[in-house]
Length: 168
Image 1 (tube, rainbow, N blue to C red):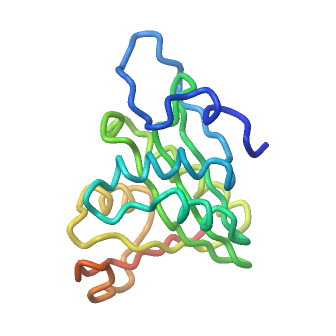
Image 2: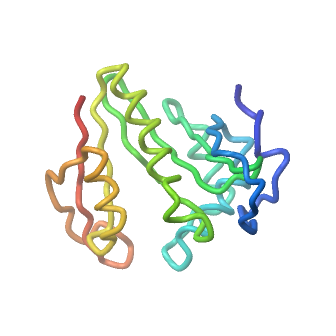
């Protein structure tokens, strides 16, 4: 089902005014062909925090074991999750929602989808999150992730990361 759904029919920067005729969120699996869409959303969600360019997104999305999902509202991509899976472990590589669509449960929807898939496969999930990103840390906690370590100076700017784990 790669390449179908909202990426081909949307304004690829994820910006949209909220309207009363908005259709519920739809999750769409994507591959390397969605690099431009994912990059645009990554730039919007992580402005000023080393967002991934289109080339990097394409390379990541083409790696073995990587899967990516867009969340689309009225056929407009507004968020994404990218994960990598090897045997019985998965890692959330990136999760983001366009700022105009944040705080509407879309990141939770993406993460819950990934967790349900991990639960079916009895896989453990890992991720890193900036120590300063309390909103993301709270979301991950609500979804059952627990902090297991801190990675010192993990990010390019020297900020520490919390290492989180979710187990089935």
